[in-house]
Image 1: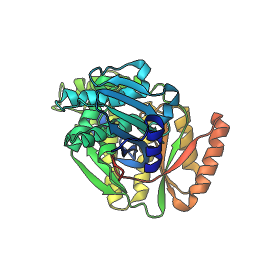
Image 2: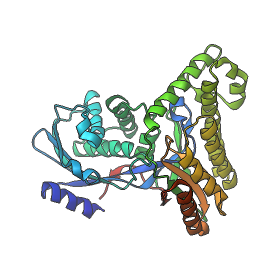
Image 3: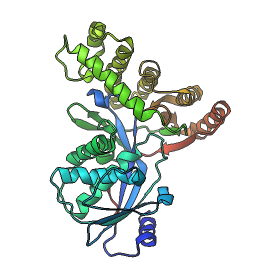
Image 4: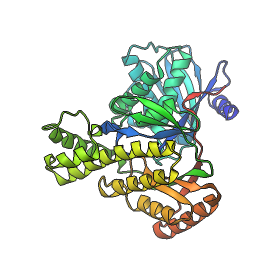
Length: 388
């Protein structure tokens, strides 16, 4: 892939000395959905597919960006001194936001560059192409200009770029998983404290299959912000009696004893999901450490049901894909992953049942929904890095 990216760079900008190639993965969250901004735990891992970039510094202050995925937009050009979120710049606003945020935090970025990118994360699938390109830009600039940014600080800056420059109120999970990923390991991350530990994914005769509904997540951003505010309202009411800073600090018993404080029944359901999902995540990691993959699978199923019934972020396509997956022989567990309202599911399946799973679920999904789903066998890879 490195050679392909160098060729793409040369085709767009001509051959240059010191062109360097980087890779930034997508991510999938195995369990712990919509807990990150509620101060809870998540359990994501970096994927072996993601966003590739080739970059070379310039002698002036011009930045030129080209994406093979958005070929019709051509080369997008702007000055390092004029970094604004412009609708016409589309995907380029994400790396632009990272540069803006780094400059705001005192990093000296006064030199332009030429950059080409190509991503093989399916657009709109909910595998975090936005955080992938944010970390790609951050790691590129850090390396090229020798800024020596601590990786966790860079993760935080990339989240800040998405929150403040792009305007999406995301938690830190996506950027953390992509920036800190390790091959064949998932990360248990406490989003309240940023304490984390790696867990080996010893699936042996089982594999992870990602199913893409191919429904674009049009509602996701608006509903994401709505759910976040519903949880914030719940927290505000719980704090009348409880000394807590996030829903993630509660266990199930504490929630049940105090849920009456939440006056809005819809908000109460949202808060219940956040609390119970956080506890499910801790139980799931413990089950994995004890090689109890059956319990892990059941917790995945419980997670999806909570996202469907209490958090209400699934929808017909995701629910259909889960129902079909769970009817399939060899499925250990299955749930939606990501923000919801389309996007992807993640399933743990017996390796020798892989082809049957994909063929049967795909055929029946098309019969019900009217178009096909896509499937990817997920390999767990390292975080954002230079390809050498």
